[in-house]
Image (cartoon, rainbow, N blue to C red; front, side):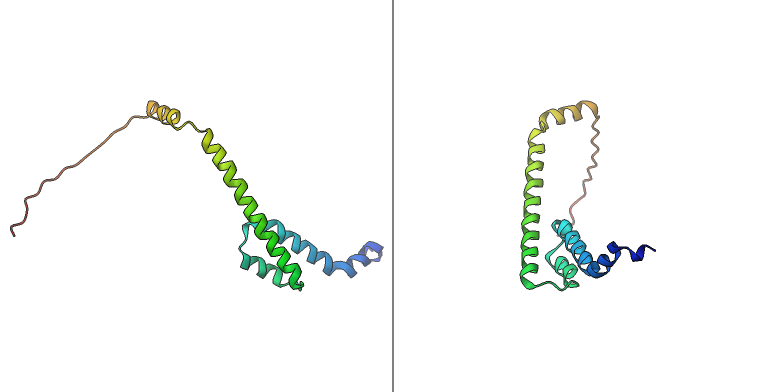
Length: 111
């Protein structure tokens, strides 16, 4: 029934293209978390011109570096907001410390 609709005819003709675009988009979104080799493997199944593949790889590398820079900057901001002296003082005030030691003295062996 639904097979006779014009939309499905277009989908049949462009189904391969739509799947290719979906796959490239999915790889592009997850590229920041993938290695270059895994990106090449994922895109290797799709027959892409070398220039497009190179542009995708360059974009993935740039995106990965941008993500790392942003995460690093945010982590540094969070760490700079922490008052370590205050946190250590609060920890010491709410915890009890117990130190145990064992000392054993042995006679030296005769040489």
